[in-house]
Amino acid sequence: MKECPRCGESNPHKLADSPVAGVFTIWGCRECNYVWRSTEDLSGLKKLTKEARERAVDLKYLTER
Ligand SMILES: [Zn+2]
Image 1: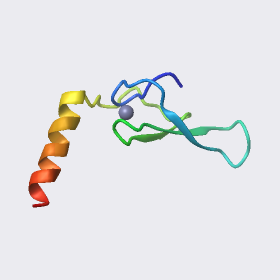
Image 2 (image 1 turned 135 degrees about the vertical axis):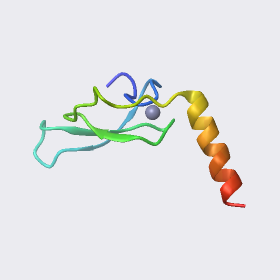
Image 3 (image 1 turned 60 degrees about the vertical axis):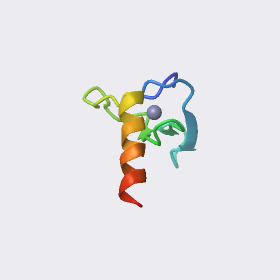
């Protein structure tokens, strides 16, 4: 896996392998906290831009105060 399908950041990290080896791998992205399985169809996934992530963080910060 070269990049996160959601935010496009490179180097997602492997979270887990399937119980039966080689069926799928679970990946996670540190940048946007998205988690996905290698067998998922991600073609319809809405991209999360860096700007959108920063805004989401801001909103969370504001609403938690
Ligand atoms: Zn990501």
